[in-house]
Length: 170
Image 1 (cartoon, rainbow, N blue to C red):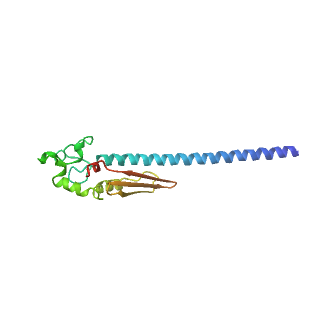
Image 2: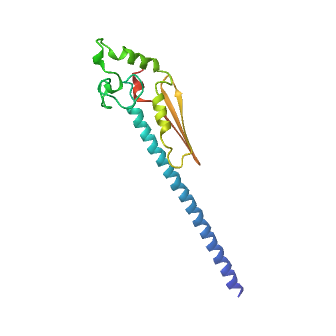
Image 3: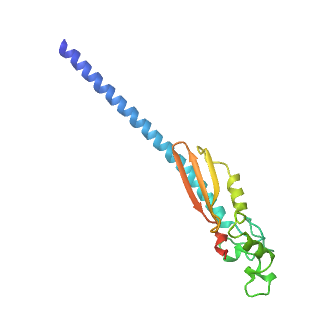
C-alpha cells in the first residue's frame, strides 16, 4: 500500500510539473505573438510615414503632399522636378534658387518649418493598435531630420527620417 501511495504522489508531482511548464510556455508564446503583432502594426505605420516623407514636396511654395501641374515642375513623385517649383516661370540658369517659392523653401531649410506639414500629417494619423503614444520631434533641424518615438507596454521604438525634399536644402 505504501508503494502505491508513493507512486501516486510521484505521478501527481510529475503531472503538476508538466502542466505548470506547459502553461508557462503557452503564456510566453502568447506574449511573443502579441509583441510580434504590435511590432508589425508599428512597421506598417512607419512604412506609411516613410511614404508620406518621400512624396512631401515644396513645389507650391509650402510643404504639401500633392504636386500640381501649374506650379510644380512635375507631378510625378519619382522625378526630381516634383520637389520644386516650375522652372518655366524663371529665365535664370538655376531656377530652383530664385523666386518667392524658392526663397520660402531656402528660408525654411534648417528650421522646424520645413517639415511642419509632414509633422502635422504624422500626428493626424491614428495610432497603431496597441501603441500608447507616438511622439514626433525635430531630431536635428539643421539636417531637417525628424525623430519618431513609439511607446507601448513592453515595447519602445525609435525611427529617424528626413523628408526627401530636404535633399535640396543648401
